[in-house]
Image 1 (cartoon, helix red, strand yellow):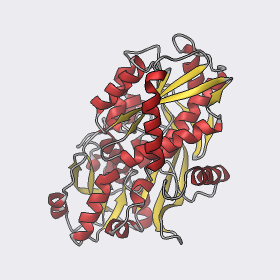
Image 2: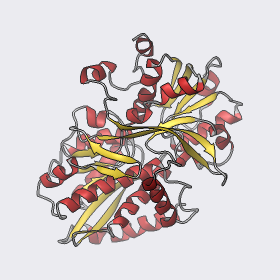
Image 3: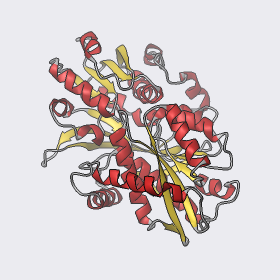
Image 4: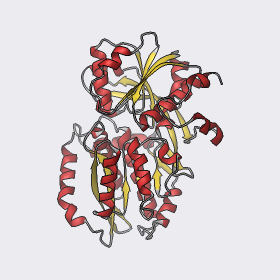
Length: 420
């Protein structure tokens, strides 16, 4: 699966010294994507989505050639900022697409404020604070945040599954809090009870103590971890004989995890989840996008269906290209024309219409899905329902939304929401 991407990265590394200065007739993009850590496979698929978007324009805008330089990251915020600074200061890119992970997004929002005449277009990160708390004027995000992705799943498991008592396990960082909060607000408002909450640091590896501490008198366990953490947890949970129903956080039931082999696969079938895509959505634009992904990258070098990371990187890149096309590839010195074009984006993406609010945050579709095994033996998220035009305040007024508090280990207050 990594063969083609390794070749691409190696080529970029060889070219980098000769590309350090942006030339006339060239638009230069810096791309941030994980190449180590728990989200490596998500980063690799994000690069695939980025490449697909460039292919739509033959890597050219109004006669200007598009070149790109990779900023390989891990999952840490400091690393993402170092790579972004290198891309801006040494590689002299025109703008950045990235990052992937939630806390990295918050860090890059703050970095963006130090480079007001440049632009950062978020690729896939989902922390709410990135575009909600003191957002940067030159930071744009065309994917819904984790709270938007999680909203609707809680009421679904109550109404369709009858699961009213759950324990929750989520990643102990900004995206984990945000995605969990979207689920929990909806679940608790619908009358559900969260019996216990557990938090896992990224890259934990050994989950035996948490598995042993899980309560038995619950209807289901919400699992809000992704990448290799999700695979490791599921394998250890199966080995420990765990058989409680699972509810998937958005990145737990993505193709980066569904493609896992072994006992983890057995635990996933039937798991309800929510997020930006449904693998079998019966929409012509989505089906064409999936076919394009499958034909662009040979089997064995990709997932059975594009992951949410591929789709988010694709959408972010398409937004950038559409905006560049609108300004004939000519960037103002302060990027004012680029920012105006990015703010006006109204894009029919493969996973539905995307616009942005006044904080440059996506208003987008959210899908409720369940994991099924396909005829080919692969796992997929099958479509159950879709909500269009979900904004980052979940349709609430500013006062109502602010009253929930910012995502954290202790937010939201489930009992208070149940009693509303």
